[in-house]
Image 1: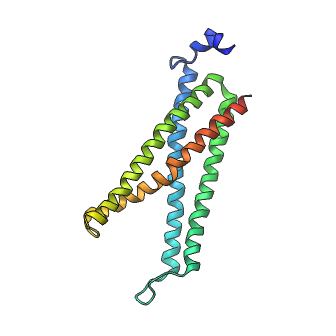
Image 2 (image 1 turned 90 degrees about the vertical axis):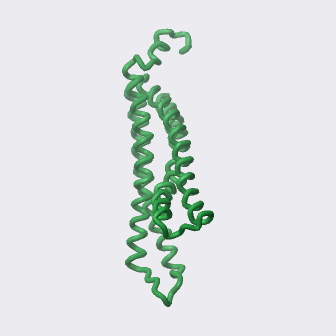
Image 3 (image 1 turned 90 degrees about the horizontal axis):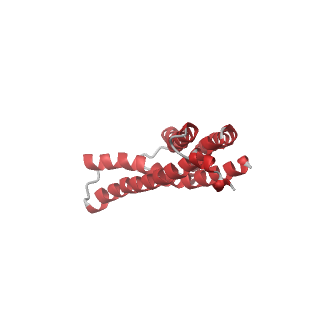
Amino acid sequence: QGLANQEAITKLSILHPPFLLGMLAGGAVIYWFTGASIQAVSTGAYRAVEFIKKNIKLDAGAGRASVADSKKVVEICTQYAQKGMFNIFLVVFFCTLSFACFEPYFFIGYLISIAIFGLYQAIFMANAGGAWDNAKKIVEVELKEKGTPLHSATVVGDTVGDPFKDTSSVAMNPVIKFTTLFGLLAVE
């Protein structure tokens, strides 16, 4: 019956302001999410580095860190990643719930935009992260230029590429699925 309503269908247009604003809001949430998820990973990594500098001494005599210290580093990274992702989930959850109650065409634009922007952002981040990661491997293994300025540049790229390909891009799929599923249930 909804498809028979021509007046409603004409409002599914970027010329209808609530629909356009919903599309902009969906894109904004996707880009905010990717930045916030990378920030959550970075915070955990910085805390792990602080712990390593403070507690793990790798002098000439000891070639390896203890298993207990290694487990503590993994625990720190996991703890901060989970805390950060939980906060991000709450924002996505309440955005979806509030937008579902706000205006129907705004919410339709939001859902469409989440799916479109999310898909292309996930593809971009997975490919860019993989390219940065592989660039470092090529410089180390094939070119054998470890310790050179070129290698230093690829290490910086790898530092950004890992959260791109391992965190933000793969987390985009659950965000899209959750938002659309929960959003439709909230509208009902």
